[in-house]
Each structure stands twice: as C-alpha cells, then as structure tokens.
Length: 191
Length: 83
Image 1 (tube, rainbow over the protein chains, first blue to last red):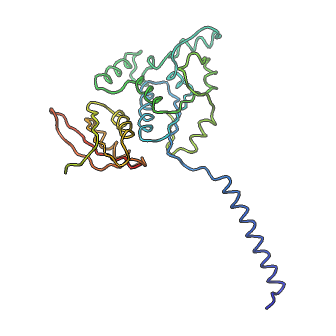
Image 2 (image 1 turned 90 degrees about the vertical axis):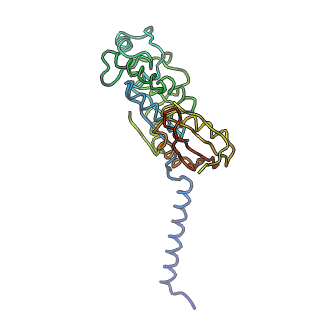
Image 3 (image 1 turned 60 degrees about the horizontal axis):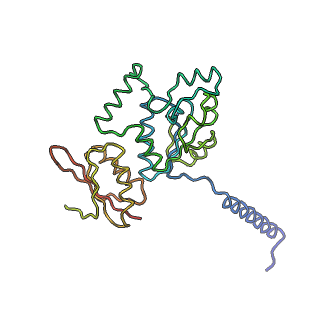
C-alpha cells in the first residue's frame, strides 16, 4: 500500500511537531523551573526590640525544625546586627544618624510603650524572670544553627553605617540576594 | 502505655524556641531508628512538636503525654529519628 501525497505531508508535519516538542522538552530539562524548598526568607526591616525578638524566635525555631533560614537586615533592622557606634570618618549628617540610632541589639527600644527605654528594660526583666532566652542569646543561637545573615549594603551606606560597626561574619548583599532565597522559600516574612 | 526510648532530654523550664532547638540537637546525636524522650514544661511545646514532625523529614512523633511533677505540668514527647 502506498501513501498518498496528502498523507505523506501529514506524516512530515507530525514528525516536525515531535521534533519541536523534543527540543522544547530538552531545553526545559536543561533549565528546570525553580522549585520551592524547605526554606524561610525574612526581611528584618524594623529596629524595634519586640519585632526583633519575634524575628529571632522564628529564625531559630525554623532552623531547629530543619528549614534553611535567611535573614536580610535592612534599614532600621541594621541596628539589630550592630556591635558599636563609631563617629570618626563620617560627615555631620551621618554622625547625627549614628547618635540617634541604637549602637547594638542591647540598645533597641520597644515599638510600643517604650517610655524612653524603660519599657525595653521591663520586657528584658520579664523575659529573664520567665526564663525566655534573651535577644542576644537568640541571635547567637541563630548563628550557631547556621542561619544565613545578609546585610543590605545600600541601606547600610545610606545610614552611614561602617562595616566596623557591625558584628563580624555577616554577608553583604542586595535585593537580589533576598529574592534569590525568597523565590525558593516556603515562608517569606517582612518584619 | 509506656513508650520505649533510648535517650531522655530534660528541657524543663525552657521556653519557646529552646525545647525545639535542644531536641533538634539531641535527635541529631541519636542513631537512625532510635527514640528520644523530651520532658518539657512549656505548654506550647505540644503543638510545636506536632508542627516539627509535620515539617521535618527525619523526625516522627510517636506519642505525647502529660504528667505532673512538683506541682507543675509536664509535657512529654517521644520522637523517633527516621533518617
């Protein structure tokens, strides 16, 4: 039995389609779509003590549960990872920011009922009395558990914070560093 | 009623998230298949350990029970390391 011309062109069209689909499949396999991982990505934007405690508890809890955790410190959140205030080598505006902003985690105030620092002291006392880990202990624990900590370089520069004012061993990055982790994360938070 | 276990971890007095963090460390030191018994006083740990077992691939929550000791409630969790 011979194939008519019409059938032959049909077969050729089908073969072409199969070839095109095979090409597409090969290119998809070569670059698989991003998959969701057991990952938590959070932006720590706030420099308030209470919000910082929440962020650190979520981070340590998630890390303990076996999730990969990334924390991105930006804007007021940079105060969380500061270890000291330095005024040398800064212009007057930067010195003003340095004077106004906390110099370390220990100097953060509450977002409500702070009363010029008295509220923060009371919360810390309550945490001690109730045997809740201090923010400093939680931060150390987070690092011990391998939580990735990235400092936003743009806001660091904007606020005139020098690397020597930040705790050691942090990564530096930008928005794509966060999104690179967030795009693969099951949980994303902005605190 | 009595669940067999290989190791006990005392996290009495520890608050969220420490019972979880310490259990995580302790279970990592067990061999696959072994059971960890965690004794906590943190009431939130009951739901916490359920959440952990739901998320983690290497932990199975076998059972949970409550007890009493020196006037305080105890929350006891039995976890098996599965991989």
